[in-house]
Image (cartoon, rainbow over all chains, first blue to last red; front, side, top):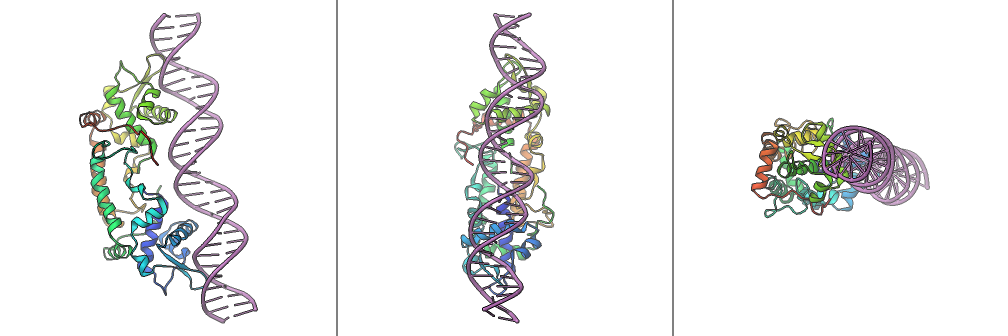
Amino acid sequence: MLSRASKYAILATLYLATNSSKDKKLSVKDIASTLEVPSPFLAKLFQQLVRGKIISSTKGPTGGFFLTKKNGDKTVCDIIENIDGLNRLNECFLGLSECDGLNPCPVHFIVEPFKNSILGKFRDKSILEFAKEVDEKKQVLTLKSLES
Amino acid sequence: MLSRASKYAILATLYLATNSSKDKKLSVKDIASTLEVPSPFLAKLFQQLVRGKIISSTKGPTGGFFLTKKNGDKTVCDIIENIDGLNRLNECFLGLSECDGLNPCPVHFIVEPFKNSILGKFRDKSILEFAKEVDEKKQVLTLKSLES
DNA sequence: ATAATAAAAGACCTTTTTATCTTTTATTAT
DNA sequence: ATAATAAAAGATAAAAAGGTCTTTTATTAT
C-alpha cells in the first residue's frame, strides 16, 4: 500500500514534530539511528520533503532538520503525495483499474470504509496534531528490526 | 500490501472457479487475455499454484487449468501464502516490526479491524464459496488497463 | 580567515519484482 | 505413429524499489 520510502518519511516527520524545533535541529544521522531507518536513504527522503516544504533544514554546524509552524500544518497525506504520489492510497486492493461502487472488486466493500477512515486521518489532521496524539497515546515510531 | 503476483493469482483462481471444470479446462492464454494480465507471468504463477495443489492442470490438447472439488476448498489465504508468504497481510501498515496492541504504531487501531475483517474473509471462505459470491454479486475480476 | 559541520546534489549500486522467451515434456486427436 | 497442443521448466531480461557513496555548498563557531 505504502512504499517503505513513505513509511520512513512519515515516521521521521512525526518524530521531528515532537522532538525538534527551530533551536533544536536534528541531524539525519541522529534521527535515522533512533528510528533505526537507513540513514543515507532517509537523507534523500528529507531532501525531497524539504523541496516540498513539508520540513525545513539549515546547513552547517548546529544545522539540521526541524519543523516550522507552517510545516506543522501539513498533513501525512502531503508526505505520501510528496514521496509516492497520492493515488498509492486510492488504488484498488486487488489492482483493478476500474474498481468502484458500481464495478466493485471482490473486496471493495470491505476495503472502502477502511480506506476512508485512514485517508480521513491522514488528510484532516495536521502533522502537529497527529504527532501530539502519537505522543499522548504513547504510540511507537521506531522500526527496530524491520522485517520485510 | 499484496504483490501484483498474488493479485493476479487471486483474480485468475476465482475466475477459474466459476468458468472452468474438469471437462472445460482453460488455457493460460485465454484466462490472461480475458482478465488482461500478462500471460507468461500468469503461467509462472499457475505453475506454482499447481505445485501448491491450489489449482490443477493437464498438458496437451484439451488440456489446461481447472479446479477439482478439493482445490475449491482452498482459500484465498492459501493463494497469498503460496505466492507472497502469509505475513504479507499481517505486516504493520507503517512497517514497524514490533507493532501490536501494547506497542501500537500511530495507525494500529485503525488498521487492526480492517485487517481482521479482510483476513477473516480470506481465511474462512473457500475459493468456491468466494467465487460464488463474486458471481452472484456481479463483482469484477478483470484488470482492464492496470494503473501503477 | 579557517576549520568543522551538516545538508544538497548527483552518481551509482543492489535487490526484488515483474515480465518474457525458449526448450522440454506430457497428452490427445487424427 | 504422428502432428498438434498446452503446460512445465528454466534461463534471461527489464523495471522499480531500496540503499550507498562521493563531492559540493552553505553555515557557524573559533
